[in-house]
Image 1 (cartoon, rainbow, N blue to C red):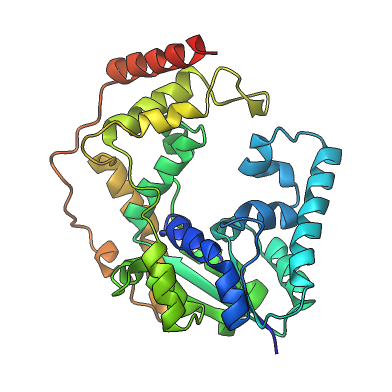
Image 2: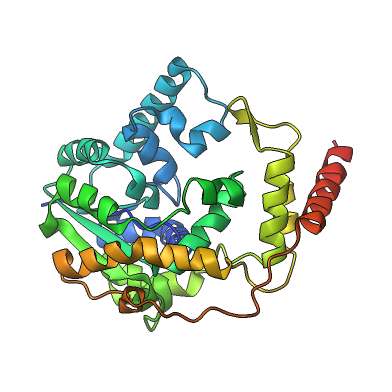
Length: 335
């Protein structure tokens, strides 16, 4: 009997840390425990999501590669299937582990296609979902979207990126069945005696001796950016957009983000009003988790009162725009 364990959410729940750690030890997992963690990448999102999206060109990883035509997209997706199926077709494994938090963004139809594809290789599927407090989730997603070229004004105008637990979980349940779902609180996972990497190893059934080796090699990834860093990046995205006509802007440089992330200071946060908006908009999601899934997660979201740091001060635009233009000029002068 072969099984697949599909970790598909949510984004911004320490995924990079445990993906990198497990990927580094994938050969040990295979040789000792017959666990296959595909070598297409530590994070399987950029392979699996284009494989099952109606239009793979809508995925950020595909955009970053400059793929714009249907023909290019078809070739890329075909290559993804070939690489993934080449690994799955080898013998010697009993458990397939896929970790792709981007799958949380796929609709029911795409997830059903993923399930049908997996059914050709395994006899059963388990789905792992990590949920995070809605406010800290949105704050973290905004930082990630800034790294991808978005602006805070655009995100606020379109409605802040919310956790949308109900929609995401309903899509997964419709595709895989409620009995396949294993749902955890991110905050509990990071409090695991061996941190989130230890929690993930436990959830994918890695024996403890091997898990300890994986845990010891793990590093902290994607730490929160500072307030000044976040709002300077926001200004840079406004003044020098990352994408022009659907392709990467040559005036932007990959190294600029690494420089910005060195800016120290108070951690990135949102103001009181936008924090309040997140809480109000997310309240039905928390009630749904309680009433439909029997999960009493984040009860603080169901009351009106909440604490908000008085020290949160948003940097002024004049300062951040000046810094952004200075950074852009320095990078482009080195071309």
